[in-house]
Image (cartoon, rainbow, N blue to C red; front, side, top):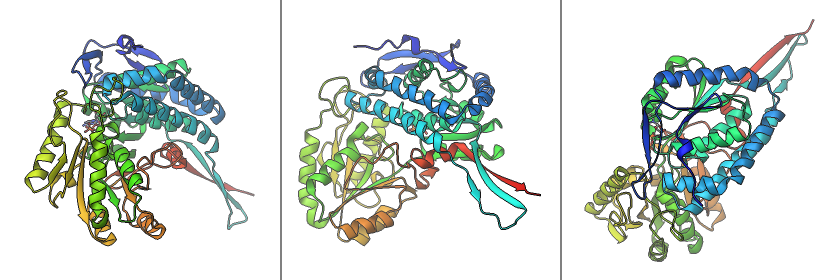
Length: 480
Ligand code: ADP
């Protein structure tokens, strides 16, 4: 089966497909081929899309939560019905193995399903009054037009997670996908169209000028919420730019997840968990295990088993059967991973497997395990975003926790132990918005996802995900 990308070349604004004089290419990172060209909107066109979302707001927010839920459920059903098409498009555009792309489409659908239900539970409250002549209550209302800026690593799920919550809350949305993966966002828009999401409620503005989109969203007084997933540097810029309009921000920024393996861990579970937390999407996730701390007593057995498992990974084009590690997103990403690995090796780390770009092509890097990575190596300080496991040995729990927490970010943390008391201690002491114990894949629609420290603000998914798009209004009623 092959997907026809040609009709995904236009932006989607006000329920119509919008072309522009200029366009930009979208490449398959596995092959370097241009697979489509998409509309390249300028600032004025992005401003106009914000106006379109604002015009659609009154009618959408006035619909009952049950009506909005019905629309979101149709969107979820369209995703599941189109799972194979969406997965093939994603693999061609982003590179991840087909099995992962299929899972991402299902994951995206789960957010529409979840928030369709949560829309019905946007409860206010009645507050007991200390005064006989006054009654107090709260209402929860949609915040207004929401803007989304999304990354290329989960090109459908990251947008679905934002759009589902925003629309459930009664907001309308303008979304700007990453220039590397606009087709996935446009495919989601096509399904919105099929699911009869009303015109103007969900809009996708494609552009090669990300700063113009960021400025349009931040400077607009109409946009009341900006939800961004991406790098910490861009998140800080958007934070600064949003000050003038005192905009509500949800920021899902970078992580530097520690993964701790204790002597009392189940080795099979720890190795399987490391593979999942590290090698999914070739290590290109913000919750990817970035630093692996292994206790001295289990170190030798763990690295031996890990290297065996890494040797079985298959690098290649994500569309080919059996491939488990696809390309990185760009040759620049490979150069960054190479720089980090070289620096670690120069400082005394040992490559147990891999350690270099992969001959398969310009975007490929070998699955790599480096042992004895020294303190001060850039590999431990920066987000790797590639298939590299840096291993550091430790002696005590206190030492491991101190190292795990000694960074400015805190998105995810992983630990492997069979000691229940230790598991409880770690769930409390690890400084991260998400702690996964004896598990490598914590993300799920029903639970809140987000970081502490410089990893961001706000939560996506879970009961909390709706809050980002709602205002709480306090009503004081005088009773005569
Ligand atoms: P990554 O390193 O993962 O590509 P980025 O933060 O650069 O992370 O990209 C995430 C999203 O932010 C993408 O949609 C990208 O186009 C967008 N982006 C990049 N620079 C800016 C900017 N100056 N203003 C607004 N959005 C931006």
